[in-house]
Length: 314
Image 1 (cartoon, rainbow, N blue to C red):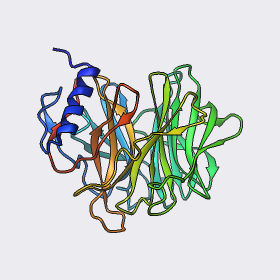
Image 2 (image 1 turned 180 degrees about the vertical axis):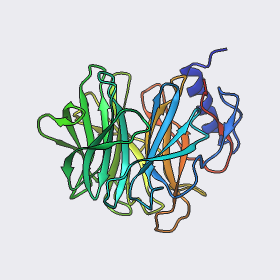
Image 3 (image 1 turned 60 degrees about the vertical axis):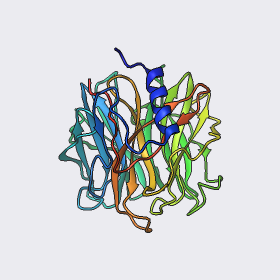
Image 4 (image 1 turned 60 degrees about the horizontal axis):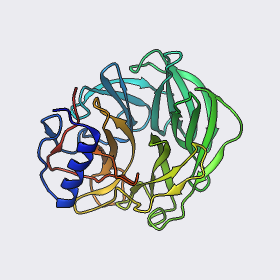
């Protein structure tokens, strides 16, 4: 029997409503449990290319001095790979990798010492070489390509942790002026520092969903919310149920990740959690589902240390 999206949503909703600590096997017939990658890693971005997943994150290279690639066939079991980018400067954070379907080239959007830029490579394993810096006093770049081929770069601008969007003429060339689309205002975004960061865009039902994190990233109150718009340039309206991923018993500071579809088209949230409730940076990589309800609201939750239904592997 084919496991379609409506069945998946119903299955997850039953689990969440019932509050089950241990889930039954999902469409893959397997389970997993968080964390899926140990070690002090954060801010993951994942792409699917030719049947394999490639993950890039903050950390894992002499602290935060570069990016390393991790590979997987199922989003659960990851193999640590080589360093793909080392700029020779510190504070290398929050990568994103985009494959241009027109040229076949791969582009790595980096944050290095609070400068957002882009490097190029022939494949997902790199190595990526410098192309150009794009924005100063900025972090957390993410490139979104719409169905019509138009490209938009989302990033966080200082001061004020303002999420901005820049239309792009090409993967490396901006077009026009950037626009601020979200800044810290809600209670959960300002609970432990005034922060909105880690932007990621997905499109569903013709609408644009801006997934982002709020509050201080080194605190247990770090969390994930979303906002929606009819246009990738906004205006964006916050979801009514924000934050949709947040601290709970044994879960601390879940946030700053990406959305990726598995091989059957179901959405998953790859993100990090903090190991403890202390104010510090000890983090690891986790995986949990995203799903939409009948009204188009986005949902998720954070798990740790309990079996969960695994993504489809084929």
